Image: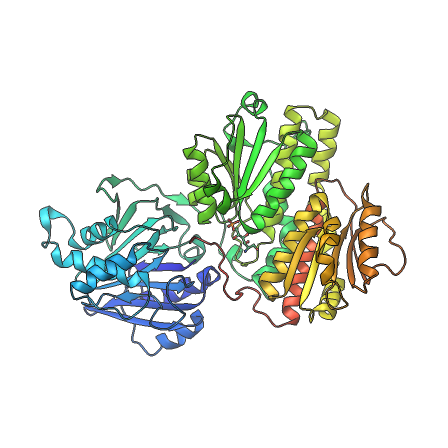
Length: 617
Ligand code: AGP
């Protein structure tokens, strides 16, 4: 997914845009560019590579204008080259455009425009849209019945677009003006002191204002030095609603940490406290969710849950499935959002549908939400970004309140989703058969989770030392059972996405049905070994690995004694309630992947090929 920044105001735009792009770089970082409208010219600098490469290139330009746009790219159409970097300028030189999304009918439009004499310098779908706007502008009689020719040309061009977009456009004939529009790709307008900053997300503008207007799908915003107006594709005026961002600049900055991932791993105790704050009942026996918009009577009629999500959020749904079935005694189905939207699965009237998404912009999860709503179901969202598309389109839900998660690898947002899943299981269970005392025990266990995470974080030096000794392996297995099987999946994903090592998560007992063929001294296994009914079964699986000279890193709850010599490495974690165990067990695998990536000198916060939120299909 790409990052978009636009500026209209009294200050020089270039430095503000570059600062915003640096803050958005976690969203995509193949290439970057900016354009400043000055002296009747669209002055563009753009380069493949990171924002610092662009910043260096920008010093070769005399950017003095106070209107500009900037972009960090995560390539969809066309390779990572200077020519494919945004902004794109129309072949008639009238317009500059940046875009986040995918235009599905770009090929037909490109053929049409080529026939009209427009030329192309890139392989992108974005350049086609830029020329399409120019085409409509050339056709648009100047100032037809008082409308703005620039705005109307963009509106007309978007009428022909199939696909998704978040765009910002400049026109040489309209100095000091910018037009932006969104469909499925997030955009918000920061309302500053005589200045307006357009951005893909709030982290790009939080250092200049906390007052924002979230654009909705199908809306266009026209910004001038005098202010801004919002209208729809069918020319209806929209009264802007100004929201206030509740977190601060510091939340979106590194502080004393080496990486955002490190910062966010160590923020987890506080993040869990923020997630749970104000969400337990007065009698301390259950959870309280104001935003579900469902009465206790309605919730008691629910006889099935469905969860949809992607990536780490999908792993969190698998843990929620385990806890809801274990404690609320209701069946749960979990599906990948990208699968659900085309599977056409039968859902019964008493199914309560949840989507889980940190960003609230993952397009597959948004599409699953829309498909479930189309089928007539109430859809609730567990989400971390106020004003995000999923937050706005859901029928209710629960915010995670962990502040911006900048690290591309999800950490604090993931454990926050785990605790909310555990609280949801408690809430439903207490509406049904769970006793008051069991509820109090469960609540107290959740309240104690942040401190147990703090204790586990103190294993960081041990885990770092283990990571340095295992960093050279090319393959890993992560093996867990029941509610720790999803944590095995999460551990494998973390290792894959930040250190590029091949890793697979499996239910521990499944390992002998094939994956055990991978076991040699060169393929270590990370085992989750909790106290309890299946401890001996897990030890048997470990023996099977050991018998084949496989190295074992065991994450073991305190109080469990492994047979001597069975594990090559032991990482102790505090013993705890079953609802808290997945949260605590996640911390060692987050740290293990982080320290292995460091040992391999990987760019932990800007991994190759990844983007923080995938807003393209
Ligand atoms: C997690 O480490 C990954 N970066 C990725 O799997 C992520 O969880 C997934 O893309 C879902 O994102 P969302 O929670 O914002 O919807």
